[in-house]
Image (cartoon, rainbow, N blue to C red; front, side):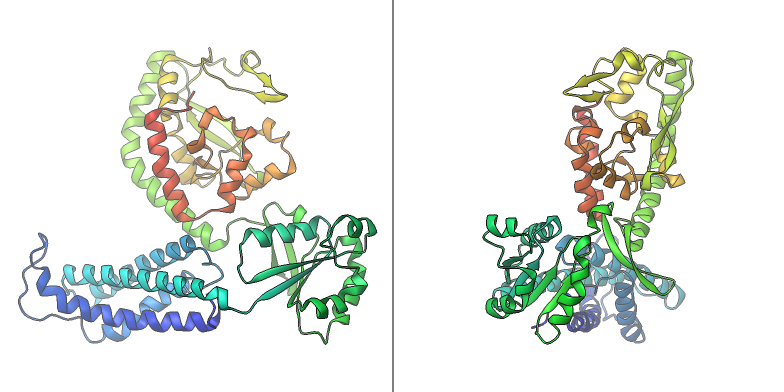
Length: 468
């Protein structure tokens, strides 16, 4: 059976896309006269077509664009949202390249013909990919059943079990564990024996996959286990006992020709960071056109109200824990830092460093905070590159010093002007006490999620919810 992440499926996808490009070019050409009623269309009554050479060049352009943006990488596109993001970006890239080719070669191809083709091929690719997903999903029940045996019922083994169950793989059954600890064997019915029993247990339970999830101190048994199963037809997977050291994930990387485990691998790969940075620059540059006049008015209002500096500069902790200077419009009195101790309070042992009716906030500052206009100078941080439009909010250093280890995973992605935390409570939920919101974003990042957060942020700002 062709699997979603197999090479055969990737080759089939390229072939379908190439045929689709040719077919949609023909369809757009045949339907062009029927689109004369469009307000921006120049009436054409005779048959039209793309230049012949484009029927060769254009499918190649589309395939290369999709390859560059990992559209055919099934493992990266297991989730439908990831595949649709890659596919949409690939379509935009291919359409841009086609427009450039037409500009440099034949400029008499009508805009309506070009735009209708782009629309048709996008819909075609979208539909056949969704249909393929439905067919593959419907056939999973009849696919080869996999039976998993986990060696080691410690924290690593239990993590493997939890994550495997969380993925809801219909054709995968977890048989149980093997462990040498007699107490675990006595307390847990799913422990099927000791490590020495691995061969008979595999044969008796008909296991197809074995995951070795032993603690580091037991790794001396690893060679013995793997060697002893050399003639048994099972897949053997090894989980290093280092995942607790990783901030987010771990990857095998080549270091001077030696494969090594990078336990500080970033949550986003180079491709995702590139897309995120490009998105930030394009959107922020467009927003600055409208923001600059407003920022000028705000600066004058601050000067008239309090006669102090317009901007407030504060050290924050950014991606990978690197400190940077964050910019905001000043909304407090100039002696606000001195009066911080009057505001600090503790709730169930947790420090709360801001609250409603803060006496340090100025009149203009209260208005700016209500509509989050004090955050506008952070667009400068985004353009500089030490912040992103969307991401976990950059935290204050003195709060980060008290973070637990798991909370530091929020720094594996660029810190943002807005984020998942902002659209789920803002100041109603103190950021340092709700790091799980940021970790949700880290675990589920996609370009579409960024867009959704930005749109929802606008509505949250208009409502003024949780802003103080």
